[in-house]
Length: 633
Image 1 (cartoon, rainbow, N blue to C red):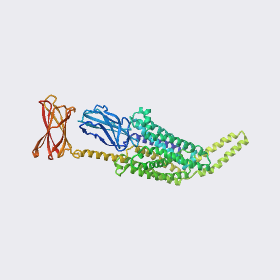
Image 2: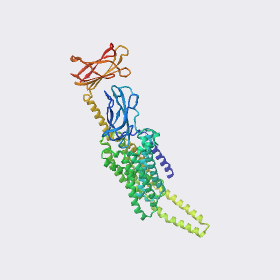
Image 3: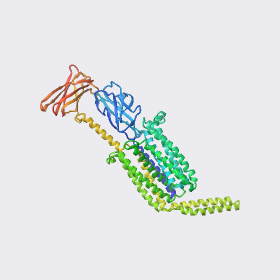
Image 4: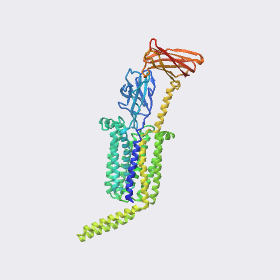
């Protein structure tokens, strides 16, 4: 029975890991944890004069590099000068070269949010009049590509290694001290340490490229690595490596000197290992809390220790579950029902701590019930809650099997003196007969092996133990998927941040609208013209802002058919409200730049359907008048 189950265990675990790898692969680039909430100039706006600088406002503090903010002209040439700088609060800017020509400019940004995740994006604004541009903004993402996938995989493996290391060691020390001498248990904990150490080194190497260019070739750039070491995330990773050195010492004592001590001598050493192990485990958990979601935002001073408790609870529960699975399937030494019951109690306490800290974290990261369904973070959190509930349900079944578990250790211990007598008899017989001692020793070893195999068959045949194995295996399968969802969740923008960013953008849009008759009434009219002469075709655009009764700003743009500014000598505008027999009201705008005229304080005396007539003169003798109606006021 056991021989057929073990391959199934390996197959199931491999399939679950592959599924989780696919989940991480399809998760996409890391979502922005700092959102762009405003900019000056605003997205899509047309300004009369080129600004001296461009400034961006984010939902939280961000870290800048020399190339974090770039402004590109229509041909894709950078027009910013100097390094990006902090304007104030969460607003950052970059200076522009003077005398920029008219056209559409592209602003690109790539920064690192305060919770260590890269944020990238782009938008456009225009000077004078919109124009065609060679700059594409569709690919502005951060944390994607091969480097992004590797970084996500490294995060998953670091969480898995931490859970196995801390949970496995806690299981041995607190529930099954005999397990310190069991080889599969030793390999499990050491494997967790190696996984966490390797993943941390991988993250440290990938960090510079992950938050920067995203190129695989930059992974081994020593200058980038030096910059990473000066960041909060880099300091957290280095601290984790130092703590792992202390964890290695803890493991060597736990599976070395501790296992060789007598029961009386183990008591003091158990207390010391428990204190030291707790300190190291809490420090490892803090290396995540100090650099990610918990370190920024609302109540960070409370959120970080809560996050540490949350991570320790997860590791104690899921890591102990993994250790129990190994003990049930891989260990020749039988695990006592008392040890399983102790773990059941520890797991119950871990679940209570997990729920309490999880409720606080959910409130802090979401802020409203609607964020559960309206944000990606909330949707992932619902999946995680469902998996935890499923895990608790399977654990309840495991507790039922634990209560019915027949402890075969007592029977095995009763057989131990008999085996010792057989071995002693064989040894004595060997001394008396001389030449037959080797044969007697061989028979004794064969008998011991047969006894061990018989005891293992008896133990495996226990239906309660078999039921416990199946339920624990099911728990482990759910735990693997849960860990993958949690990893993706840590790379997703918190619901509270996403909703705040949406509100800020809505407020910015409302503010922009209010500036044009509190804004929504701005009117734009496009009219094609042909003066009849050589090179006399084009398009004239008239903007009224805010298109209301009273004073208005009027801009007139004249472009050729190919979209380039049209240098013509004169433009005139006349307004007529035919229904009320008002007009024509003549307006002569001032020339601002090539193809751009403007007039301020244009008075609209009454709301209505106004006829806007524009006279365009392209030469001394070639001119035409085109018109279009618009509701103003």
